[in-house]
Length: 206
Length: 386
Image 1 (cartoon, chains in turn cyan, red):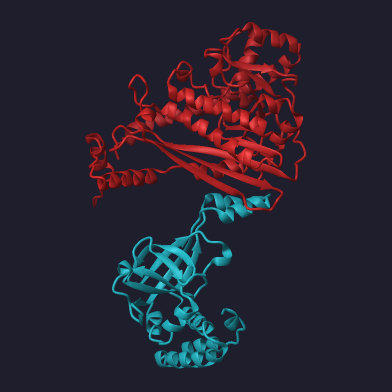
Image 2 (cartoon, rainbow over the protein chains, first blue to last red):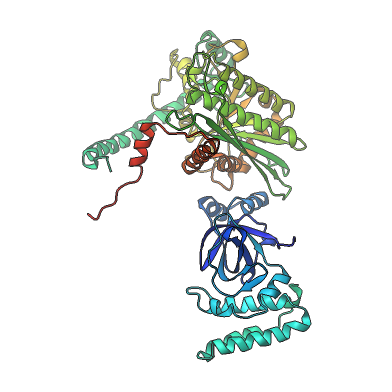
């Protein structure tokens, strides 16, 4: 990992609300649902912060034919996995970085095509999530699994902190969710329950 | 839409009736030809060889080898370790209407180390030809599509030779999606251009490198229209130099003879001698194989060194079957090589756009021909509310 975090793709299409990137990546390097990423915008004057909400791999007739073949050699399977089928990564814009300041609102301009997309480093995730003002942008996203995305993002943010800080971060996050979802107690209960779930992966993800 | 479907409809109906008739006639001819194959197989092999010899040097057809001509060979056992290399090429022909004259050849290739569990390696080599000497011949003619095809063939073989030398540790099957004849195009036999000469030299050198590397080279031809065996049968039975079964191809003869995974006898390809010795293709042999579905017969072309080595012959037979088992009859490596080589229309347009942009950066404004521009006007269909 370099200072920028690992490169996970290049932007192929974008809007102010989010961006989509594609890249051929080995399975082990694939980013995960709810992970934070960033892509350069405004000729390098800002970086749009994204939250990965979808990772997809398209198929084609050849791949489908291989999948139903009676006899398939291990080398054919390995080759199909390495074919130039791009992994597509969709990210929701949840803020941007200008200079050394994170802003938790939609960016003034989206990134442009072919802008590299990097994973956020632990330090960057900590800095961006030191304020929880990005939560409304997640909750207002339409046609996305927003509750799952919210929980995954907050757990990622907690995972970027030391074991001592994780509990207090999740408590703060829970309070913020309670404030935002006060009118929908069933939904809030579900979010809080999943935030509180013990997960050893939380500390391991560091 | 400019095609008047109302006018075409009666012709399509006639075509359908004709197709049904043709299938019936072909079935009768196929039955006859198979009987004739068995009949000729009973003849003295030396007599058959003498008949071929008497045709002189202007006849194309099959010549028998030591195998009985109606022989059927079962699949040999599969070797657990097998290296398969395959290459294929694609091209952008010179377009005299485009802003800049060039042609492109893209070679895709793959190496599959069966039995190792490793991920196959893939390669892609695009090359743009734009120098005057590459585009024009000595008579000032722009390079033709058929010559570009020959250059592409030579590059495909060159790539196979490179891979065979690089991965020479295991038994290697080298596959091409093509026949193995460089000078098969009639119009090129007497072509004296440097382009063809250079391509042919490169092709011959590459074949020699494959032989030295010990690779089992094979050309896989799906739905071959060749009738070399039928021509031999017509010669042996009726002393006629041409195929007496119009519309029938060799593969039809074997459709009912070969069980799945079996191959036919091997034949030597007897070719007219119309080119100087240094331009002649190496001696090519071929057999037919049923590699997958019931109605598929592939023609496999192999060079002499493969025919003379029973181990390499088994490697070709078993290796192609292994390659075809997941794809229902077409080698996996050739599917992938094609995928890596193919240049789409949109890629061609993107390349043209880059060339125009880069020339503009150098202060050169390029324009397509007026004809190309008018075609662009018509490229997008109009949409209306009717």
